[in-house]
Length: 288
Image (cartoon, rainbow, N blue to C red; front, side, top):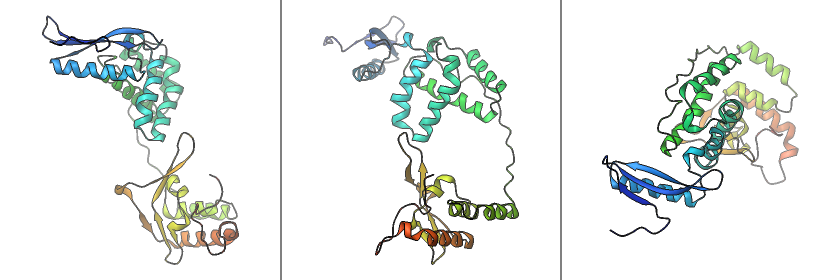
């Protein structure tokens, strides 16, 4: 058998029949400690060893006994959540950890975290007045993060997975009546965002869809609005994303939206149109 060079780790069979692979990995304090992974076959152990070596070479700390919840959360956010998730989801996870999880559990060792501690955290959040849905988000964020810790073999089981979050009682939404919607639009006439309000009320668009509308999406002659994009927050600025095929390009034809858009365009045309060229900026002026 070819002897492995220094830094390549080692793979051997235990007396109980399992295969073990070991390698020196980074700890959060910058040192190195020996870390072992296990597999039912030599290949499984060798594959896990290769993953350890790859992560260590990129500077990711993997010394399991040193991780606190706060330390692992920082690693998970930067190396797992940020590259994989949409910006809005990433920011939701980050803020949920910062506001609701780390102040209570941040100093707890990940390997020492128990289900009863997670259960107590959720109970305290309910007592603080968070809604059942908000507490579910807290639980889901912690469970998702710890699931990655299981995959990294930082822990052997997910303590949040065995804790049940509070049930959500769905409340029936009472939309505005036509009279209430009309009163709102009358009260907002003259406001710089009147066109946004009118289109939103008439077509029932989401905020991101409203803010992503461009003049090229509006056909005033045919009284047609093409909903093609959705604005999503990003860490540095907002960006507009095209709607995916399952929800692409809805076409609406409403006289109220047509009238509001035409009125707003006519009132502000001199601010948006240059001779011989039609702009392709936001359909409604101003910053949102």
